[in-house]
Structure formats: C-alpha cells, structure tokens
Image (cartoon, rainbow, N blue to C red; front, side, top):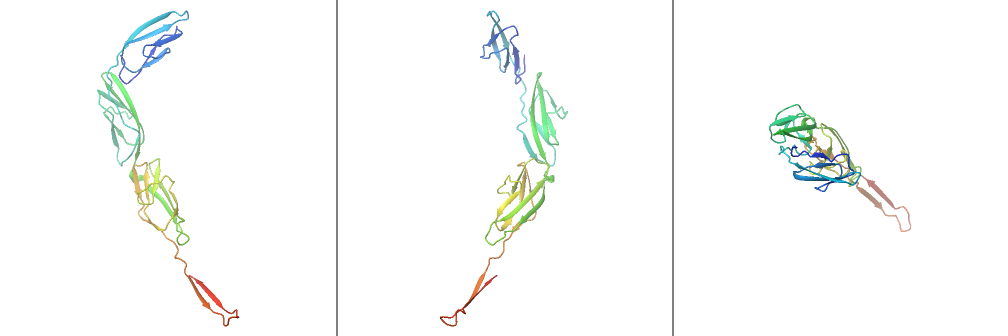
Amino acid sequence: TPCGGNPVQLDGGENYTEWNWSDGQSGRLIWVKHDEDALVLSVKDHNQCTFTDTIGIHFLPGPSINLGRDTAVCSRNPIKLTGGTGDSYSSSTGATTQSILVDQSGDYVLTITQDGCSLSDTVLVQLNDPDKLKIESLTYTDVSCYGADNGTIRVVAGGDGLKYYYSIDDGAHYFDNQGIFENVSPNNYVVRVLEDSVCSAMHPTPVVITQPDPLVLKYCALEPSCSQCNDGEITLTIS
C-alpha cells in the first residue's frame, strides 16, 4: 500500500513482447498515481499467447505539505517556514520541528510523516539583510547646453541580493538598466535601489542636474555715413 502523493511504479514482467494496462497505459513499466480497484494487465509472449493479471492499488492518505514558491525576503532576522502538519518532521537543517528556521539563503527541504507516509517539499529562499544594501557610488554629469537633455546619472549598489533595479524618481519607476541613466533633463532626482524586489535603499542626497544659462545675444548697429558709403557697423555681444 503506497502513500498518497507518491506515485508507485509497476513492472509487467520481462518475458513478454507486449503489455497493455486497463488504465490506457502500455509498456512494461508504468506509474500509478491514483487508487485502482482492479487494474488489469494484458500481455503477449513470443508465441503470441495472451495472459492477464489483476491488481488493486490503494494509497494511504499522505500528509499535506507546501512550503510555497521560491521567494526572496527582506529581513534582518531569521524567518520561519511552515509546510503543514503531521506526526513527525525532519528538515535539511537537521531540525525535527514543524517549522524550518531560515538564517541564510539557500534551498530548504521539509519532510512530514503521517500514519507512516512521508512527503517532502523544497523551497529556495533568498534572505536579504536590508542593512547590507548600500548605494556604493553615485556619479552624474550636468546638461552641456541650455535646453538640452544629455545629462547622465550612474548608480552602483551592492548587498545580499541577486538582482537590482534602479530609480531616479523616488521609487515611482524602477528600471533594470545596471544603474545607468542617460538623456537626463535638468531637475532634482531622488535615487533609490530595489534589491530582489523586496529591499530598497535611498541615497541621502538628491542629485541636482543643472544646465548652463541661456545665451543672450546683443547687437549694436551704426548706419553708414551716406547712402553710398560702406562705413556702417554691426557689433554682436554674446553673454
């Protein structure tokens, strides 16, 4: 009697050339996942003789276990994972309690046993300490000409995480751009970094992208002394 949730493999025997099972499967080896009151196997040998046999399979109710999806967590302290209830527990950490204490990133396995049946589940946890998330450097260049938008902002961040996203509008929008912002207009920008979509850090000082003052053109014109004269003059001053 197998445990629920654990498929059982059946072997129809090696001395035959054809195997057909009443649940629609064929071949010598099959997997059975559900109760079968009367699973019939029909086989043929090398002489084309047919033989049949019947087996009943009933699964014991196994424990319900679910550690959830792989996840990332922002926490300064260890977290606990619980996957279900049963008669006894074992985990990849060596603990024999219902909960798994996660104190570092990695794969965690929990096995629950109930009425002699054991089932296991595995989850990958990325544990990020928010105190380790730092904006390590922040550089920028101002706009080169009045009215242009060719400023740049470059952000370098580090921490426990695997993936980083960057924002220069105080977290309203994050970008997967390696922290490089180009074509930036003159303005004040608040820089934030998002780590694995769970931890965030803000640079304490806004970035101020400036531009040169607009050019002012002044001129002074002196008319020629006579209609046929060429002693007129125009003086231009740019400031």
